Length: 267
Image 1 (cartoon, rainbow, N blue to C red):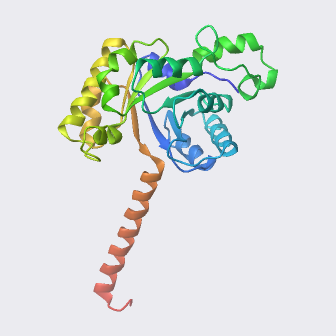
Image 2 (image 1 turned 90 degrees about the vertical axis):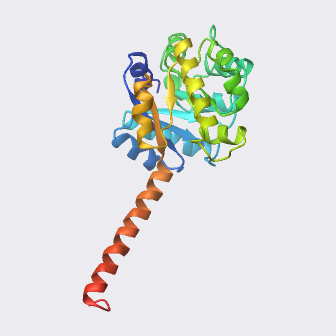
């Protein structure tokens, strides 16, 4: 059901927010992210196969723990954006925004008249018609968070045009695909990539749009914070879980080896 977008409210107040990508198609995973204290989650339907029913349950799980649920849609076409928002998402992350026209289309697909052309529906976000539908339209337009993800050289070069579009609420960097776009795949800390990220952040300041960073080293957090960045994506739960599993296993193996070395043959 439509509710206040807590992450958006914090951003507008200049407070710091942090979130994770959710790459494991499970409501339990989302619930854990909320219980861990994050402000928002980006459920990934671009790189992950998530069926519509599971996506809706993942959004419900976010609601249950007061977590702002965003969905990274597969592309900027109106269909995926509509279905994510009708499932109850409080915003969308649109990947590979390269032009002003694509930004305009993303905003139009995400908001109702007079701010856009999102198809009318009295389903889950409108409490299945229990809410006053005209009042719901105005509130939905206010609460939705539209995030443009910049992952291509063209998007960096046109960032001013993109951020000039009314209704773009945040810009999220995508250093991984940016590195490929600049000819240095997976070199996310290469000078050319870091320069592109700083270009994005400086443009965000100019246009008054919050910039969301994805720190890839501990020192990046304070560097971005000192530059005024107040939104952070701290990775994805799949990667965090994998590293924790590896660490636990390595710790076990190390202790067992030490024990065996002292006692000999498992004694």
